[in-house]
Structure formats: structure tokens, C-alpha cells
Image (cartoon, rainbow, N blue to C red; front, side, top):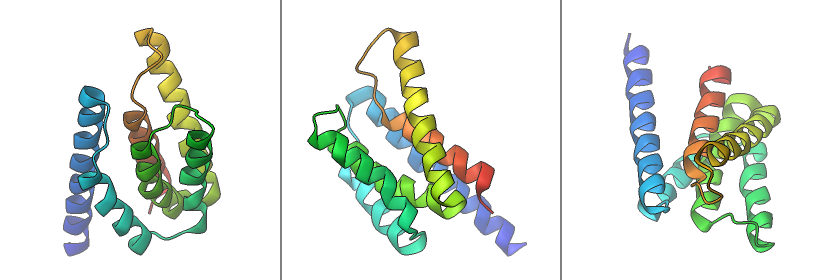
Length: 135
């Protein structure tokens, strides 16, 4: 019983955090450090998996090459990469990366804008992997 309550509390906290980040990114095109950095530390401590470094590593390479990825996306990719890796390993991270980018492309096509924020798609993709693959 206590485990069920704890799981609900954790899911609610993660959901509130994700919704807050998504709304801020949509409105101001920013992913604030006050929300991304604590999540990064928590994910590295609680969910460490080497596969989790794939997502931020890829985005860092894109940012260095001028690929339109911002620092907030890279910091968010650390925590989301760890979450996806803890749930689904290398395949989970790969699925989250592909899903996030497909979602962003879909939003850009529907909105007919090339500058749609990427954070919400990253959050939906990683949380989807967590829900589908997590235990």
C-alpha cells in the first residue's frame, strides 16, 4: 500500500515538473536551470545508466555544430536520458530521441513554424518511454 502511494506521489511530482517545464518552454522558449539542474542531479544519482549519456551527448554535438539545440535542451536531455535509460536501456533512449524529434517535426509542420520549442516533445517522449517500459 505504501509503495503504491509513493509511486503516485512520484508520478505526480514528475508530471507537475514536466508540465511546468513544457509551459515555460512554449511561452518563453527557455528551460530554466532552477528546474533542469536539480532534475539532472537527481537523475544521475537515482537513475544512472551509461545509455543515458547518449541523448545529451548527441544534442551537445548538434549544438556545437550550430544545429539549433540550446543549452536548456542539453541539460534537460541529461535527466530525460537517464530516465529513459533506467526504463528501457539503450533502446529506451533511442526510442525517446527518435520520438522527441518526430514530435517536434510534427508540431513544426502543423504550426508551419520552424522555431517550435523542443522541450515539450522531449518530455512527452521520455515520459512515454518511462510509462511504457518502466517497472
